[in-house]
Amino acid sequence: MSKLSKEDIEKKLLRFPDWEYFDNALHAEFEFDNFKDCFSAMSRIAFECEALNHHPEWTNTYNILSIALSTHDAQGVTNKDFKLAEAIEMIVEVQD
Image 1 (tube, rainbow, N blue to C red):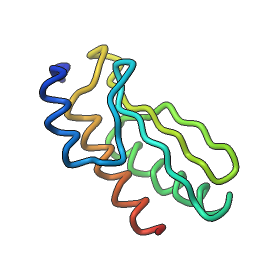
Image 2 (cartoon, helix red, strand yellow; image 1 turned 90 degrees about the vertical axis):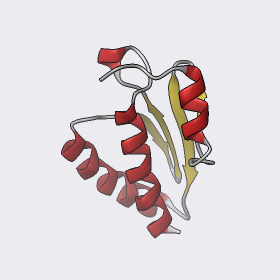
Image 3 (tube, rainbow, N blue to C red; image 1 turned 135 degrees about the vertical axis):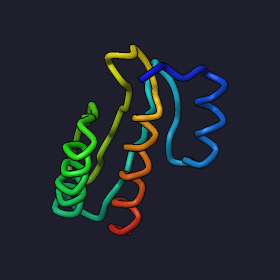
Image 4 (cartoon, rainbow, N blue to C red; image 1 turned 45 degrees about the vertical axis):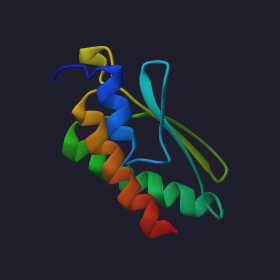
């Protein structure tokens, strides 16, 4: 999978208002009502990650989930990252 140009990334980000591009990765932060809801979303996201064989860098502090997506083999953002971001958005929307 080939690395996307900064222009391509910025165009694709128009469909992902919760995400930003910096430090060569897509970044988002999601806030949930409590730890249980956050952890539940993380568990659901984990299944998508396994299905796509693509795993985020993420951290969880109580009810906040911070995610960074990049494709290490391509040394940057690829379509694979946007596919996972889309799956994450669908999961997080259901939690709202």
